[in-house]
Image (cartoon, rainbow, N blue to C red; front, side, top):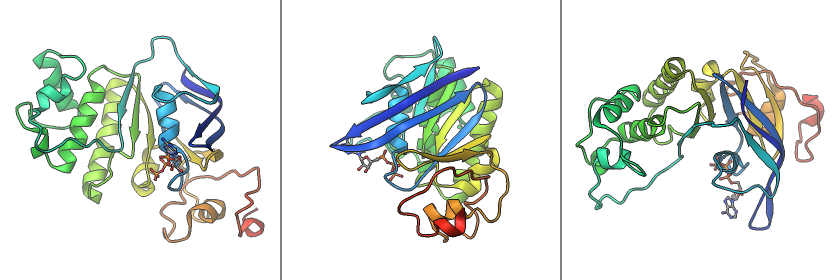
Length: 245
Ligand SMILES: Nc1ncnc2c1ncn2[C@@H]1O[C@H](COP(=O)(O)OP(=O)(O)OP(=O)(O)O)[C@@H](O)[C@H]1O
């Protein structure tokens, strides 16, 4: 069953067409990863999907009653602001203590309810954001580069937790990540975005994905080229086009 679908989604920001005719869908229980260079519209796409941004044209179609949990790329909380984990998790509405404990546990944290948000480590902070996204028992969990700033073991542990959450809640996951070496093995599908969808496919091991490297560069020693790449169009800016096709 499709939880969410975008239909010819276009978003213009500040005079630029940031997203052009994006058509994607997420099915119940699957993990879909969006990859793309900086500024390719990944966060914009997620913001349009959660309804924080209105499409310029096209549509986002959600299954009736769909519950979405969203973990943002960054959240700045002024360190001088006294804000406990309990109060943070109670925004915008309060939950019973048992539900808070359960969400923290699901996010892989001990009971940090009385801690100040400002005192948490980077990894703990991200997991509190995850706990908050899990509070409403989402059908679809959306993560926007949720491991930014975490070290490699921290981010690998975070993605393992996401996989566990997916299995225990049965939710689908739509995420943006640059850490393909970590996430590719856990993704059912990968969508490559560069203003439009360049290509998508399963994360099968393809050591020589020339098309992908033409967009993302060759500095990844193959770690980023882990999925089947199906180009059906030409990139004007793609100097290696002939070699890639
Ligand atoms: N509010 C805005 N007004 C004008 N332009 C914007 C606005 N928000 C984003 N943009 C522009 O839209 C483009 C896409 O931004 P977006 O944050 O979606 O990219 P991204 O793929 O998530 O990038 P990154 O990987 O760096 O996080 C960028 O060129 C950005 O400057």
